[in-house]
Length: 245
Image 1 (cartoon, rainbow, N blue to C red):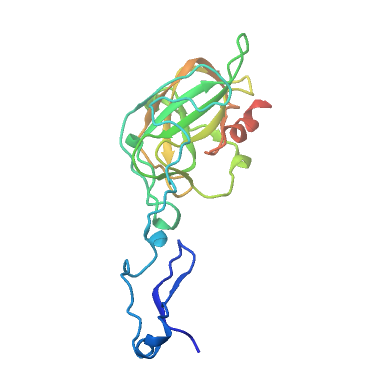
Image 2 (cartoon, helix red, strand yellow; image 1 turned 135 degrees about the horizontal axis):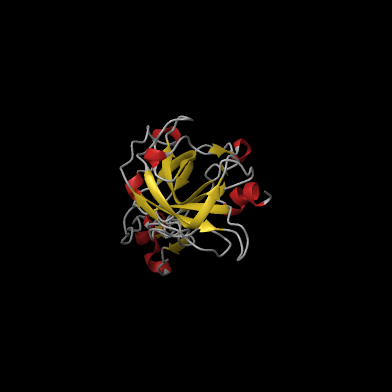
């Protein structure tokens, strides 16, 4: 048979503690036997540990929200961006829970990857989420040489650079990268110190923003062999496609 207990308290934060009812002298045992122990003061239902808010941070420490930030792992000269319009994104992200990034919430920069004295033809585009909410960038940037009004057609893409993992989600301050190869076929060269970028919509081939002017670090000669990669959060992955050319 279980004996009577007093002040029974059990929580997830503390070990089980029992205070047994004190047994009196033999002379008063009969009187106490018929008297139930009264429960002591409690601190309410539930566990103190389970009611405590989690201290785990969900803020990403990656990237910078500073406009024009460079995302290259290799030091280089950096260009800047001047948005020319607002986003016309086509729908949300994965599962419809993450929206497409709006142009006004992004900053862009370009970094030259070639060393001093080398022909400038390897560049890294960095996009930074300068807004206060997570958003998605889709596929790859549509790149036009020079001013959009004078551009003939967008730059071709490295099809093999598609990571096949869906849109790239950017938390505030996070960065994504796309690498550009300026020249590989010395024909129809076009020299410029700026490009025009359009964000991709959710559907492959669609437009997700108005034209955005992005400066290059210097004048670069582009030709018919120019290529751009898909967006990725790993700059080295993007650069692998262009640095071997």
